Image 1 (cartoon, rainbow over the protein chains, first blue to last red):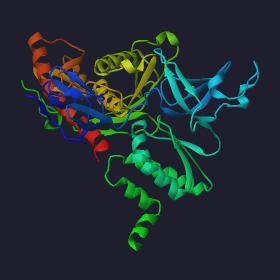
Image 2: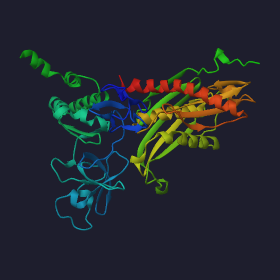
Image 3: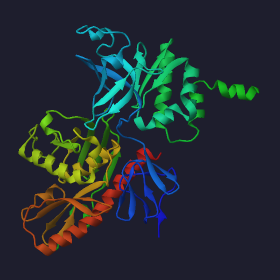
Image 4: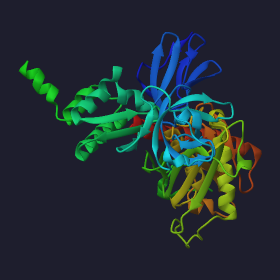
Length: 235
Length: 230
């Protein structure tokens, strides 16, 4: 009775029937309507055994615990900072999660993080009323001085990073820049040469726009000068 | 007495349609929907924080629509800009037409703003607005059960016609009946009516409009696939 109506990696739209019958299970991006499984988002179908999932191609960032994100300081409160992390809710860094040293009561907190500063931080807790707590204590978490921040679609972050970081390390290597990608789709780029910085940004833009095409790593490689190809030919 | 439509249009024939997704770069989601001489542009922003706080809903996100007809949009007089009694009503029915399709329980205490601007109007604006807004919401990645499509149906001189233009809409003894529907599940989310009509005719009109809405839905699907399935 049960039947799958789509193939793996098909692009589906909201309301489209993906499968009929009760043999399949709806996962993220899908829902069951009576005997049918329908898509609830624009995305790519992912079939995994009996599970049917839709990986979104667009959409807002939904914060999760343990995500490493990039945020911008928008407010300084009595005991910490409030950050915009690109979702519907603000995030908080409390004093003890923000700085290592002892901070005297009533001292000026803007000396640590000022308005407009970008910070790489980790989500430690999300309360039921959507209060998000961040920490700066952890490996690689810090305030981001210099460089610039760009925004990409949050669901495409895994593609920008690539398998085991292949894509991001390719861009880093070719443009000689430092890049940090937050799970919220904010990307920090810093390099010695501003032109290379822009080139890295453009490369990330291409990945963001053409995320579902095959052979993207080769394309980016070519865009950034394609030294790898020459080396391969020589060998 | 048979009624003959402009351009030899059949009773169940829609005006030529066109849809495009992602027309506004800075919006989170956007779409344009054109049907005959009516063009709607919808932009979605959010989910974002909602203030003042008493408007917040702690159980689910709030959808806020704003319908606006631009001053130069009509074929006659200049439309007085800014909110009016009529645009407030249409904003409200648009919200009610779109809300049943959306799944907003993950966005509690926040708001999703939809701005619908009519750049050209030749009747059927609320329907074009709903159709465009549904596309824009899908483009913004808001989870939804189904796309919502809308089109009007009416009665002119005993004929049940689909997708009225301005002359038909303003026909004195005519009936105008805009319908919005979640197309796959055939659940109707908006019915309004203006004029006098028999019960049987309403039932027949809604049957006719369901067929027409399938055509609108096809245009919506193609527009989304054009952007995302390159």
